[in-house]
Image 1 (tube, one colour):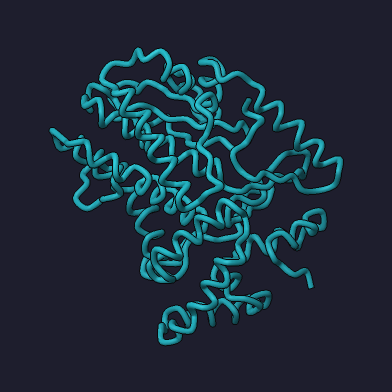
Image 2: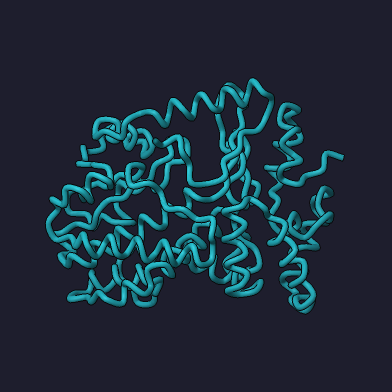
Length: 361
């Protein structure tokens, strides 16, 4: 049943709002993940009415029937079992998605497919299922590489699925308010704004950070398994490197862009504020929804950052330009003007302020 989530999921608001939220999510999650449903869902999410039909099936059926050629099923099962154990070593509360809440699709046309395929939608929070395209067997023929790539995708989506979230109800619609360590308003405005500048490694969009952390978690989880695969051509080499989290020299455009726009900024931010232990603290905060330890870590780290003129100038300028800042370092770094204004300008949203630590005074 997709009503059984693998995270802490909370509904906020008045009793009537909570009842509406529960009803809407139950309706979303009761829909069978049939090929017809998936085709309509993909067209809606990708905003492409002419999206070609794609062959889909549940991961549970995929594993049971074993009809896909050039795919090492035994290796895949070993990989997800090993990877799940590895993730739980650091995050004991983690649970992977049920295999009947994960959809696998055949690659379409001449595209590479896989994590960066044209149909990529990742984990769907409201409907509570994950989705992945298989690598195109005409481009990547190695059965182990195709299996480990799907295993990595499954672990990536499972970590997103396990991350804490809250849902609210406003303007006659459901909205996801908190996800991991970030928040957003019904309008879609995020607590954290865009990344300030590439050279400012001390600040980052929090959604980008969480996607980067999730990518690192998945790469670490399959690290011991991916060592068992080899690349026989340049494209397969790129795929294997990307699964390992090693992006230097990758020629594939989609992989390189994701590395530059998501993984590299997240890695630089983590390195600036504390390295591997800080990365694991962020991962724990994503799963628990408790941001306090991450906030304290950054506050403690500030003692060694006083000589960083760029950081100090950034904070001083933000405090000077926005009178609502200066209360704590987390807000100085991340709280966007648009989020603060949107929250305070709509009285119906005022009860949400306490969840993200904003004072209305």
